[in-house]
Length: 46
Image 1 (cartoon, rainbow, N blue to C red):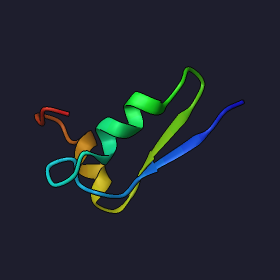
Image 2: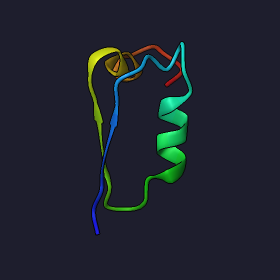
Image 3: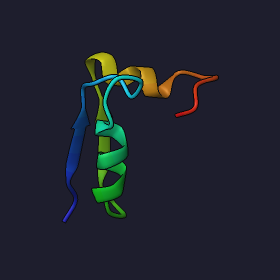
Image 4: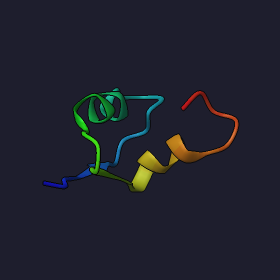
């Protein structure tokens, strides 16, 4: 079963992305919205 995980908090302020990655399984999707998109910027630690 595929699950869509959404992250809307900045990875620089909260640990939501790290938690999401810990629980995501193969085949799951992660949607970065709102401040969560900062995790996709080039040159960041994420």
